[in-house]
Length: 493
Image (cartoon, rainbow, N blue to C red; front, side, top):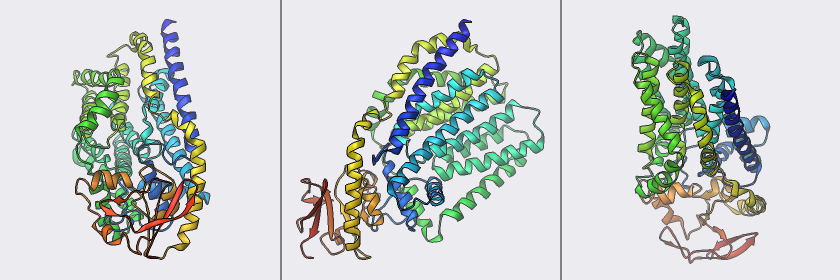
């Protein structure tokens, strides 16, 4: 009876936290806030860009100097949904669709984890759902509106059939071929959602090396992977944008190494707050590796270490976030379930310890979800309507080869309303990472500023600077004020 009480208490605590975060995400998703996570407004810009008929990827060195860092699958998925719903011309509706889509994808991932733990690992229903919800509450706020969620869904959909191979030795050759074909398709979709899916492809080939019919398995996996990759490529990449794809998703993510970033974001915050979770994952991996007679143990233990190492090395990159450790957490959950399934540990003895640390886990997990943004919702709605009015005023004044410089760092929906007419729509990536590192130079901008090519500059009222990217802005004077924005017009016009 003690076991059941502890299990129910742990489930109740995690469920209440997950429910609170789910409700918060719904509030954030339906709000007018321009940002609900790390540079998610850049993702929204890419979605609106293709909805309006432009290529997703273009040369970042040419106006409007966009940098789309993600692979295309998420963008085209939202485009398809907004097309079905008929909301392509409503920026707020697109914002809501994008965020709700991410929340639904995460919810599906939770269901998949729980159901697979129950069906294949024979974990108790209550504990399986507890583990699945632990993953949900670990999802950081920075990916509430990005392609990571879709990538992680396909990561889970790839891992499950691989583990099923090992757990069910009675699988027939035909079933084995189908599972590898599925893994090829889902891992291809993972790559098309996010570049780091390539690590998953490597893991799949490691799995094949542990099998007996290596060439047969390689063939089945390769058929699924290559056919799916080719199909997505043909549907999302016009031939004229192949080079632009490389400039955006390869060169565009060269943010450089930053030790201070690692110290602040990870060492002082994430590692300390989740030390028990990360340590627990490593312990699970070591326990699995201690029983090498079982291939599933070796594979899962190695996979946990593989993804922890990849996440740790990636943490030194400027702009990186705790979401890099989500694959490690997912694999640790499956690894723990495997140890319980194999009776290598008795989780009942550890439930009391889990209950003791649950308050620390709850505080740490709830910390980065954006609770403080609730108080900004009213002003965000007002700012959205000001941006909409301003865009409606400016866009008819522009010619085909003219753009508007939005000269402010604080994110706004104005760039979304202006779409391809807003210069540097992905400001953080362009001006704070790639340009200082010399990845892109944007030399073309200096020949356009102070000319009819950029007839208007918009800034928050009273904040207009004298210089932008070392170029003087003295040839512009205040013209119109709408809400919190002031439009500055080129004096020569």
